[in-house]
Image (cartoon, rainbow, N blue to C red):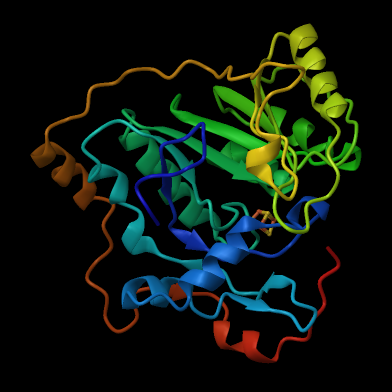
Length: 297
Ligand code: SF4
């Protein structure tokens, strides 16, 4: 977890769940599994404890998740500590709607977001069906923006599940964009596109992103192009047809309460002092050691 993020449209992350499973082709180049594997041997014992055993390197060199999802309720109240308003990427190292995250835990996270309206939260999931199933049980404060990933045409259906939520801002992460996509943008506010980056980056055609831009224009949705990707992300940059696209929904300004009031609010969300373990681990992460290499993506 860090308070600053290099992701262009957010300025912080809040990671109270770590660990995931690859679900669809967009997961092949998952940056989170790389970060978690690296942090699992961090010199800081707290960082190591949060990340150890959740990711491993397969025999073929590809990184994969070990199958455990680690919940860290002790991190739920962190947003009360931040003294300035942030636009927060929620759980950049996991998927909040992963099947191993209990509904009660998700509800607690939403309650924290509702109690800190001076921050804007961007929640991202590929588990759009579970999102839609749980959406009626969640409160949807205006500062929670809900996003689903659509990397290629077969996954465009995730937008239908997103539409069934009560989020004020609903948006799509169309990245890594793996081919041309036709989207139903009715009721959606924003679309982010991007090519894949890194040594195993799959091909990206700017024409695919320009076509998404045109669909946004037709539907009245904002459009943000993150990057053109490729093995050398810096070389390809962000421009599409000679310009950058940085549109995003409006962030409401809400004053931050004084520290003493925030501490009082935080107490309601702070779990009792841990006895023994500080994290609830639903699956023993140590089984990562013997897990056979089987990564379809
Ligand atoms: S859902 Fe996200 S965090 Fe999970 S494996 Fe896929 S890309 Fe990684």
